[in-house]
Structures are given as C-alpha cells and as structure tokens.
Image 1 (tube, rainbow, N blue to C red):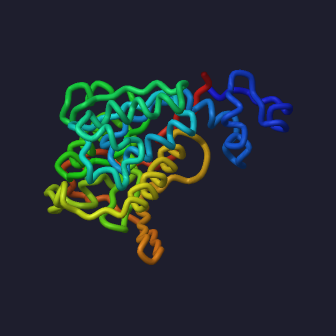
Image 2: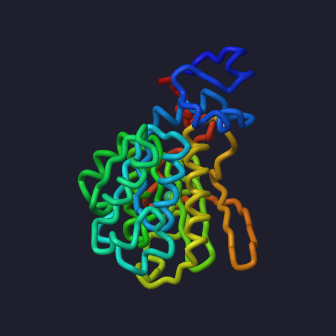
Length: 273
Ligand SMILES: [Zn+2]
C-alpha cells in the first residue's frame, strides 16, 4: 500500500523516518518518498561480488535498499583489485564476499547485509532468493547464470541480467512470462566464456555494475522504465551504445510453458515501511 505524501513533504523533500542522505534522491522527478520507502522495504540478492556485482551492491546500499544478500565463493586474488573497489590490498587471500559485505555495512549501517561465501547452487542462496524482490546476475560463468535464470523464473522473481567482457557490457531485465529469459537470449548451452580468463577494464565493470543497480532500483520502484524485453549494450572503448528489442523463444525449455503476460500484470512491489 502506498504511503500518503503530504504537500509539505513534496515541497521540502523531508519525511519523518527517512534519512537526510536520501533528500536529493527523493527530489528526483518521478522518484519521491514512495520509491524511497519501497527501496527500504526491499531485498536484493546479488549473485557475484566481483567488479560488476560489487559495484551494483555498493550503489544499492547507497540508494537505501533495506537488505542486500551477497553470494560469491572463495577468496580475493591480486588481479581482482583493478575493479573490485570494495576490497583492499591487504584482503587478498581472504573471503571476498565477507569483506565486501563489511565494507558496505561500514558505509551504510542502516542496510542489512548478508554474506554467503558460496555459489548459486548453495541451499542458502535458494532460501534467500525466494524471499527477494529482485536478483542481480553478476556471475562470471554461464552455467551459474542459466541456473540463476531458472531459479528466478520458477520463483517469479525479477532478474537483472548484466555482464561484461573487456570494455563492453550489456544489461537487461528478465520477468518470467513477460520478457525473454536468459535461455531465450543465449540458448541452453554455455556460450563458452572463459570464466576466469576474460579481460576486464575496471571502469567497464563499474559502469555496467551501476547500470545493473539502476535497473534494480527501477524494478523496485515506480521510477523510470526498466529494460524489459530490451537489451542495452555499451562499449566503453568508443562509447558506442545500442538498444535492441528481445523476443521470447517459443521453444525455450525454461520459460515457454509460462503464458505471456504484460508488464502491467507483474505487480511492482510498492510498499510503505
Ligand atoms: Zn526463456
């Protein structure tokens, strides 16, 4: 249920119980108090806390999301540090996701941050996913990306799908029965990414991570228009950007059984709290 907003609040941007940290965000046309309250009552699961997912998680924390669930297995390595800005040099060899979670908590103590030092197949990820309002796919391999896609389609959770390679990246928003799913887009097999071998310009990971956070914020609020059935690609090498429409694959093993619906039927979650 949307919270009623007084004329005074609209005029000043202030609101009881909302930190002044969000004053200028609330002032953005079309955003407002309702969107801020929606963020505060939302949970985002970020799968993959590398240069892409770590940046997305950081900006969701800055934006005032209520809860972040971060999953990523293993320890940080020195080559990670050109893009994984939540980590420090002395944390090489330590759990990446736990240190990333602590870095976000230090900056934004009002955000509940849960760290899962495991991959997408972990039961803990499944348990949190079904209680999330949006999932961000920032894993570095398509086996896990396709698994996450299936989990989100099955649970009816919106998925922000973002990836990058070298200086190029893409982002789109997936909703089961409304948009193509990841398998509709790339097919059922692994496209053959070298999970730990592809080159990365750090600023490209950060830029695409910010775009993923922006799409997650749009999914969770009434602000803006999310990239549903639309893929946006950006090549930072020459700053070439493209948008193109995506279509559902009627033979997709993951989503073709779901009848088509419009995004108006998806029921954005706008809540007070
Ligand atoms: Zn599909």
